[in-house]
Every structure is written in structure tokens, then in C-alpha cells.
Length: 387
Picture 1 (tube, rainbow, N blue to C red):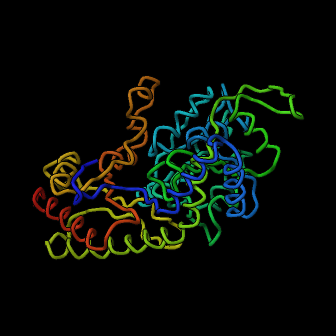
Picture 2: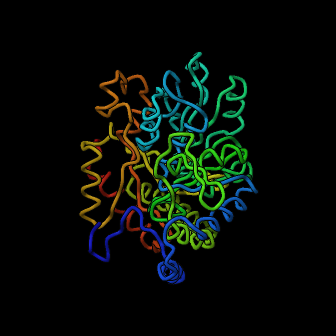
Picture 3: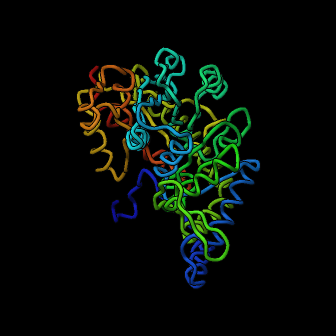
């Protein structure tokens, strides 16, 4: 990240003084690892999700891996997922010995194409793991209809979707196993962390074992281990940050939506002013009902440009504007190519992954930043437009 105060990063977390003071109180308390603040945070999250059991973990990768373990998915099993995600989504499937089956994405939503899932289901299929890119959920009714028809578990990678909705119901307040990330760039952050939302207390209790060495305590001095667990607990320092972020979430959400509205208006105005109406710059779905606007992403019309994405990003950086790539197709990574996966099997994901660009979006942005970003992007596109 640049030290230039005028530089606009693609994201920046927001921490107020109350949060800083709350962290200091935890540090002064002497109990800094998992303790009373973690319990308080989990209770607050449970209330947020309508009373469903919730357990927190050290990061959003652990949440997904433990969800797979809770669902008893392992060697010989297949899990259907999307190639456009942070690679953790499929890495955790590999880590439990299962096989990821990649289904191509919808070019408009950029999420897994639910209409293509059924054709990939086999006798080895145990679960579907959809990803809600930039906070936009898939058609939840269709998703769970497919899962029910084929008796599959659903492990929702809702890492980016805290605060998103489906038909006015919060993502996480219904469904099967729902995984959220609280990493630093998320709408609600604990710096690092994540949570899983469960259907029942039995699976939540099992997840507790998996997050801390498989341990169960009895009485004041008794303990037992009956499953193989790891070390994936969330600390009270992280939890108290989450509690403060939860208070501010409505304000953050409203600000993100307002900035997204400005993006749509300003980018379209800039394109028209530049005479670039024929430029096929793909904007996200204009959904202000379900999306939490975790990110604002465009897909560059590389076939109409005489440069690649890296050049556009470099020129934006020279203008003091940070950008990101979320994400290249997972099947293009060496680890996956070596296992026989090919980007050509999911051509829409290959194109989107090569062309997608994440523009800055975070609550601390100023209104004027949108004009500066949109204007800079359109000038660069015009410069490289092959007309």
C-alpha cells in the first residue's frame, strides 16, 4: 500500500476510537485468547442470524475446511464449486482428500451457473460449494432445490457476503452450512477470522472439537480427544473488534451502497462523454436488494483494447488509484493444471478471470473519489481503444 495520503487503495478497513479502546480493554484484562468476548461475539452473531448456532474460527479458510469435516466429506468424495474464487475455496476440498469439480460461471452474475450443476453430479458428489462473488448471492431457491433433489450438503462460501440477503432474509439465517470470512478487507472484519452458521447444536459442538485439537472438557480437570482437530480458535482480541464492527455494519452497508450507486452513474456518464458507448465494459449486476456491495468489479473489454489488464492497473496506480484482481480462474494455477484441470473446460470463467478488475470500494472513501477513479479508468480505456 502506498504511503501517499492521496492514494486510493482498493480497500481499507475502518476502526473507530471505540474499537481501539475496546481492544485496549481486552489487552488490559489479561484474557486475550478465546474467552468471554468470543462467547459474546458468537451470541451476537447467532442473534443476527435469527438464533442459529454460530462458532467463530481463526480465519475463513478454517471455517470451510471444518464445514467439510462436519459434513464428513473426504477421500473419494466430490464437491461441486466455481473456478472464480479465492483459491482457498478449492484448496480446502483438496485438503480433506476430496475432489473439486469446477462448473463454469454465469457471465452476468459471475457466480457459479446453477443451470450447469446437475450435469456434473455423479455417485461421488457429496456437496455443492457456491461462492457469492463480491457479495451477490446465487438464486438460493434454485440452489437448495438442486441439493434437495440429489441429497447433497450445501456449504456456502459466503466469505464476501456478510450482510447480503435473499428475498429479504439475511444470508446465513437459513440454509445448510454457511461460512463467512472476517479478513481485513471484508464488510465486517476482525482483522483475521471467520464464522460458521449451523443447522443444529450437534454439528456446532463437533465444529468446536475440530477447531481446538478435538478436545472435550469434563468437569474441572477432565478432558478427552475423540476426533482429530487443529488449532483454529478465534481470540478475544479479534472477537471484540467484531463486536464493534457489528454495531457499525448498518452504516457501513449504507455507505457501500451509496458509493456503488455513484459508480454506476459516473462510469456511464464518463463513457458517454468520452464517446465510448460502443466499448463493452461489463459492469456488475445492479442489485441493491440482495448484494452487500463487498466489491465493485468491472470486466475489461480486452478484445477491444491494445493492452492487457496489467497495463490498465499500472496506469491507474500511476494516477494514485489502487486496484485488485478477484479472481483468476483457479484451474489456471499450476497446482490444478498438474492435476489435469484445464481453463478451457470453463471458458467463461477463463475470460472473466483474465479480464476482471476490482475498483476501490470501502466506507471511508469520499464521494469525489468515485469521479477520480471512473474518470481515470475511462481515460485509460480511451487511450488504448482499438477503434
